[in-house]
Image 1 (cartoon, rainbow, N blue to C red):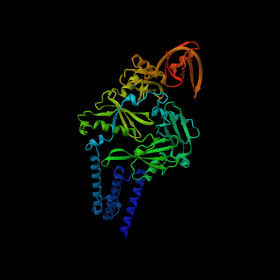
Image 2: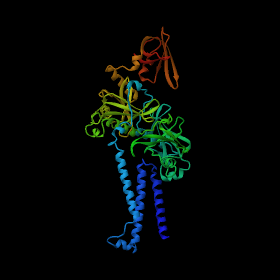
Image 3: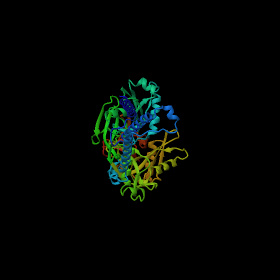
Image 4: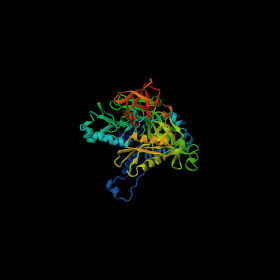
Length: 546
């Protein structure tokens, strides 16, 4: 009877320890999860220690004090202890062999084929830049704006702070960064968790407009929760076998409803290797309602499924393992890899990860660049030789070296058919002070400006001086004549000037947001003017005043 009670006590202790470990670490019940294996190993270790300790005290009935006083404690190893040690050894061997058989060392070809890469044409895929949609802020600059906005919210700043998510997404075809608020401390969580987190921050990446979006119902499921409403624990209790990625993404849909986008890992090689994404769980951050989608069924409004680092890792496998694992380490023939950084591009209403592609030898030139879709994993390679991003950043910084500004990791733009690096130049406080443009293929062509318009104007002039004409100019028509009349018109808050020329039926449109066209105000009725215009629309759009 006493023996049964002892075993019952041991079982209860093990169950309590296992529950606490599971509640804190929340491993998946899945043979592909390393956490699951360590959970089982930990349980076996606890059982081994308890059974051994019980036997030790049984063999040494003189009590704990006498045991401590002895130079050595003698006890016999029970069969149950031997069994536990044997199970422990088998589990560790399986874990080691599984890791080896899942590695690129023995599966180089499979790893190389995880991602399909398509060669594409740059000018066909990347349209000429629209300066109203350039995401000019990086994550650090967005965080400064978010914290500044939070500081002005006197009704919330004492209870909440801004989370560090700042996911870059497209909302209604505009690049924005969004991040939820979070509780300022455990005490603030205790006093506010019944109503949840009341708002999230949204930052327009083109205009830098920052908005604190207040919600009718608070966010109840987030990373800032401590108990069952913690988003990771909430997901685990709903999907105990799913292995979620380390990073889940905060997004909003087109109506502004907050969601958590939670990718589920798919292991394609062995026990632990060849990770891609198989499913995506979308969790409503307010209600906690979860919907599970196959990767090819994810809604169009979702932008971030594949983490940027995962996409770059998959591309590196594709580029370095063409001739096997040992070639990637020793000979390195035909081995290509992504450069040391990435940025995001909005294309086809999706967010694409951009990175340069260079040889593994670490030279200062790119052989091209790659775009990787964060929703579908579609990957496009563009063969354009030129400077690495770091070289371009150094070139831009060299133009303003007297000011000591630091360049952000560049964006990729199409300007007049030329692949161009665009970057912000920030001071020591992290504030954007200037902008720079560097031609990828001829990185000695550098232009800077205090505004995007100034920078673009200087860069366009640089291209013209080197014989490169924009696509718009190639498609434009030239005309001259005397101005017949002027009609200023306000269109959606933007001033346009419509005018006609004597003897002509066409009406021409000058958009005054284009600073290069402000010379139109110097002209009057009856004066002669020469312009370039596009004949596709009515009224005809003026692109240059000669």
